[in-house]
Length: 368
Ligand code: GTQ
Image (cartoon, rainbow, N blue to C red; front, top):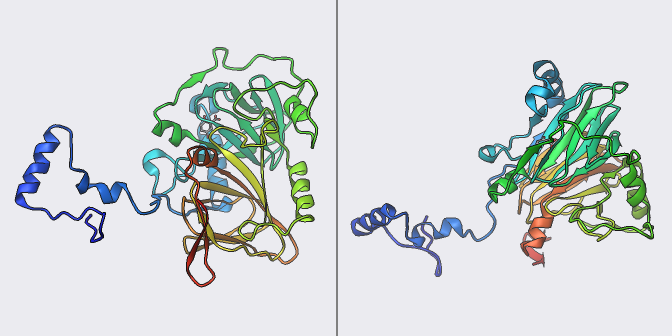
């Protein structure tokens, strides 16, 4: 890939050079100028394809897995989202994995731990729960729960509940790319009753503006393992009454670690945003990979020039550095988008960049 620009590789092949490259190959080496323009693109070149996964398309297929495999045999009964450009690493976008997990009432999956950080966003059903390091959390639709890296966790649905489907989000591809992924099955298959009251971490850490006077927590992830839908929606509604919002994102709030105010986990961040009735955002692009689930309402997003119409429970992705804008199709109802992303990694490594799409077609850097 030659480029006729000063400072870029532009060497033409000659018989002598070709022979030289072959000699280098014998010693597991190569000439940089044969690959330089490819490995140092002018700007990020995402292999991920902007993709919409419609819940209406997937739901019946997810439910079919209930008859086909048991959680005992499958480990976890999950249908994963396979980005056409990232099949080699089983990613939904960039280095992020996502899937839809389904469980019957009365089923339990084995407890396990892994180096990948994980989260779930509940889509439907009643009686679901997750136990993280002995802390049991009840889960309802649109609740958001963390299973941070290294924690023992297991999922189940109470016998009195109904079939539950939730979205899993993990950084499995990232941790594999870093060649740092470990996995362990709990020695007793299920965690023992730890005696912690149900939902204790949310009751302890989820109180607005208040923190227990004697609280201690020094882990790299939020102690508030579960963020419930009602207070989340209430917070967005209150904030909407106090701000014009962002021209690019409407009313956007991050789920945070209440100790630090920062991202919920070390490698995965998450947010909920509200698009007010009729709102249409301006286009921008930034580094980082993003997976959205429509928590409420309906609308559309234009991602890298392609328009995607979405409704509740649909999932779509925005690859790194792709132009994107969102619109709420309804004139009377707000729309809410849940999102998880790799921003803690991007920001932590000093790689965040953002650009607004200029009014007259030009680009304008707004953060670097
Ligand atoms: O439940 O921790 O969808 O380890 C994929 C891998 C869920 C989990 C997935 C996992 C999990």
